[in-house]
Length: 117
Image (cartoon, rainbow, N blue to C red; front, side, top):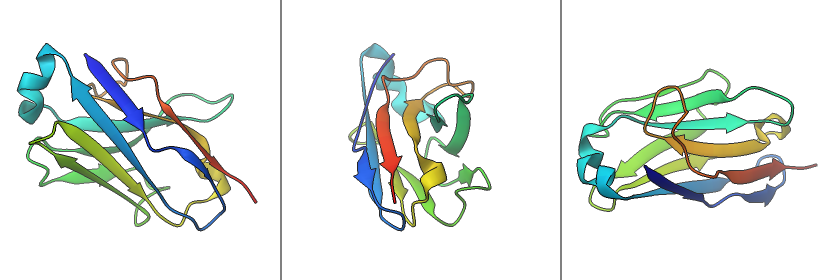
């Protein structure tokens, strides 16, 4: 499984970022059969599930802390997953990972998101 996250950065509270996750490799031929996930890991904390989206993109779910602020989406023609993050807070600071596995074990290298005052 090859997943490459991008789009992270440093923004002030209230700002926005859009993360992308590009899939490649043989498994990506089956992209449209996979639920896809975003996870994050803050310094000194465990990996946390953030959001997931169904294979068709019709259904999506979020952890309570980001509900109403984050939006997950996917472009199946491009094998790409997105996470639009709005109204960012300092507690959103973390490395963000995408995964095709509900446990997050199979994930990319991550992209750093830092919210600073």
